Image 1 (cartoon, rainbow, N blue to C red):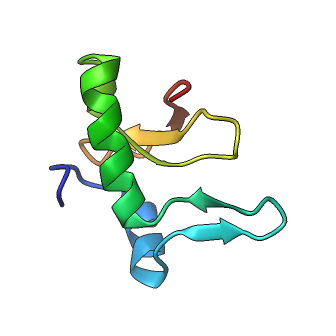
Image 2 (image 1 turned 120 degrees about the horizontal axis):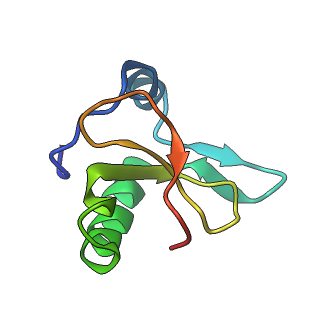
Length: 83
């Protein structure tokens, strides 16, 4: 992957089935397309410091706080903080 990251198995399966999940009522991606995963993380990593580089943002609920998983493929999902 362009980010040298491993997704947890469940998230990997989701991306094999679909390139993101679009929420029609909210008119935004809840799970970002892979191209957006790459661009948003590459932009955030230098700005947010070393601890943030251990996480990969992959979506959000429209609040500005992305959902993240550990970059090493761990299963824990957390909020990365506002971007």
